[in-house]
Length: 105
Image 1: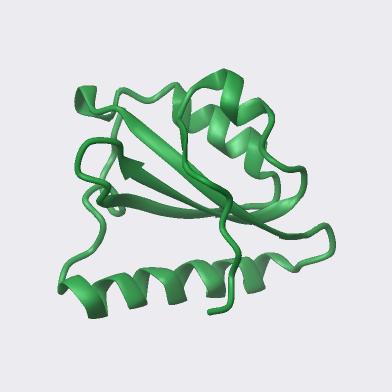
Image 2: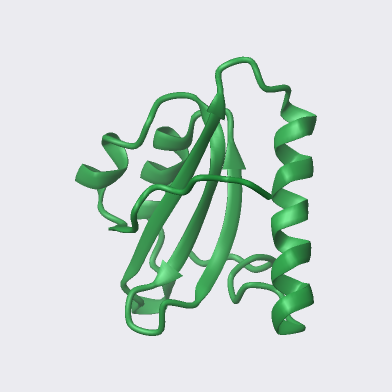
């Protein structure tokens, strides 16, 4: 999709706070297996990633990477990009990311 993702960083509050400002997409991956476990979007990536830090994730250690799209992107465009990423993941692995459609708290 031509996106330039940040380098993966451990999913901690300290790291999430320094995520770029603005609307964008993010990937959460298991640090050990490197498998993507969740794909998301937000009008404020840093804030959303802070919220993700507070979830239990069944004890897994996660990392995140993100792509800031911009301040003026419309909400429906973010959703469309997120759905495209989920669809691409499904096409490659024949399954959704592990926590995509279930609660991880």
